[in-house]
Image (tube, rainbow, N blue to C red; front, side, top):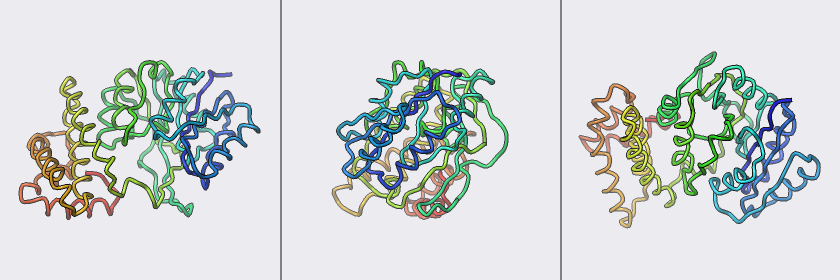
Length: 322
């Protein structure tokens, strides 16, 4: 029997999906697991569903807490996780039966600190849309290369799910308890990793929900401006990461800028974001590492942000990032 794997699932108002998600974990071919379901103050039947599953499977532990967001929920589970390894799943996604076994075997065979897999993307009707990344085989990265990847939409995505981690990577790190907690946190985990492996095989079924907050403006998104600043400051101590930090930051700047409501109360924020873009756009243009779409976007901003906005929506319709 392999080492114990703690699977952490934050749960909030997902009564339509969480039963299927939990079942996909109880059916794992790798049996030595504990499933930590963190009910983050749900006001629907999610908590009841979690408790019923805990009665049926002794590997499941349910933690009930006041609503604090995904970062807070994951931190609560990290504090009590008993496993040698840590894994995450979102409560509206499902794992294929060999999700844990596949990542565990990859980690052991390749002597990795983190093993990661691809995922399939579905809509709410269960219609398959695409694989997140197209390709075949296996890729190995250093911790620094993995940070570049998660900041530039590479094979290692920004979310903590779809990976298996040695627990010691999390010993002194917890998620920032804010919007976009993954972007604020995950580079600190990869910084501690020597070897990160990625397989193009899909072991997660990722659900895109029509009411996703990603596509809507919310005031709490403005914290992302501070996260971008913090990550650029982090990269200044790791110069090889600067182009990636700029690319991610400017993508976020455009994202927020073009979602801001046409309301005078956001005029100061709008002006601030434009200044932030102007501060880094030349560095992006001259960089050999930043992608062409990003360079075109910032080039167009020299002629006015209206040009960039048109490109932004064309790109987003194709489900691609700057």
